[in-house]
Every structure is written in C-alpha cells, then in structure tokens.
Image (cartoon, helix red, strand yellow):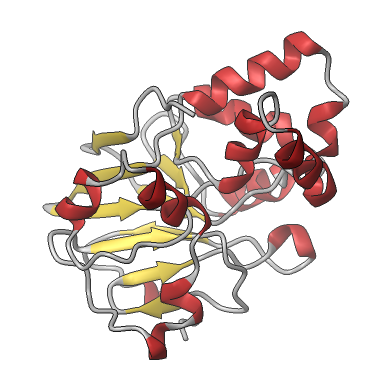
Length: 233
C-alpha cells in the first residue's frame, strides 16, 4: 500500500500546540476538551497520534478533521485497515470485527472518500516548535536514532512496526531501548494505558477514551512539562 507522503514536516510559529491520543470516533469528547482549554481555532494546532476511526460513534467526522487547518494527524493501524480492506478480505473481516463495521455500511463512493483521506495521512510527523523538534508515531519506534528511523520508513517491516508495534511500551525491560537521538520528544498512541506513560523520551498517550476511560489532550510547550499537566507513570 502506497502512502502519498510517508513523512510530513511542520513548523508551528503562532499559537499553542497540543497533542491528543487516539480518537476512535470520539468527536464529542474532543470538542468538549477543546472548549475546556479554550482552543483557538484560528491560531492553535492539535496533533493526533492516529486511529481517528473505528469503535466510537463518529468515525467519519473525526477522519474529516484532517481537512481542517488547525488539525494534523498521523495514520494509525485502524486507518491502514481501511486502506487494505479492498485488496485483503482477511484484513477486511478483522477490521469489521474490531470496530470497522461503520466503514462497510458506507456507500462505495463514501468508502472511496475515506480511502482518499487515509492516503493523505503521513506515517511520521515531525514538528518544530519553540526551538525543539517533536515526533509523532502511532505504534512503536525501535530505533534509537530519529533520522535513521525516518530513512527506513519506506521499508514494509519498519512501517508495520510504526503502525502496529508495542515493544517499547510492553517489553521495555527485556529490550535494549534507549532515548531516541535527533528528536526532543516523541508522542505515540495505539497501546491503551491507564495514565500517560513515559519510556525514555517517548510518551504513550492513548488513555482509552473509546473504552470509557478518558481522552488525553496535552499542551506541548518548552516551559510546561507533560508531568506538570497530568500523572505520568
């Protein structure tokens, strides 16, 4: 499966910068959060760590957020399942069993629109803000060097790790993981955690909104550490 733009670069110059965990169709919860933080839709930017769709009530509304100038998202494994559905019947069945039934209830034209939107989403996003570099990956990153990881993202195995992997969060004690060089902080989703969880300079922020837990929205700021905003384990 080809992606239009596997790596996206963005320099945020004006307004605040936020990151949100996996949305999974939780559009109303997101809007409530944005109201609470007085999000400025003209200047602020919100980045999602992927999985905009499936399981929740408003998958299509969440996916269409990528067309908004104030919103950015990397692709998650659930968007990838939408992309593979037309060419892989086994993947389509797996997708339908894991929250993707809304997709197969759409008309063919609407499904094609979903595919086009998903193809626009990068696998990796790198954001420069306040003199620092922030990386966004959905599932996992095994490399200890950000530039090396970017250079290999066209490889199918590395793409699979980026979208589906969990080793850094699940098996960190058994692997020789280190801080990732060449990037200040990396934000990831995919694996549901009770609290925002840090592994070296990586933060896992999918706190299970669609499963009745809560939606994590964090402000990214040089003078506002994540640990000052939420409990981090």
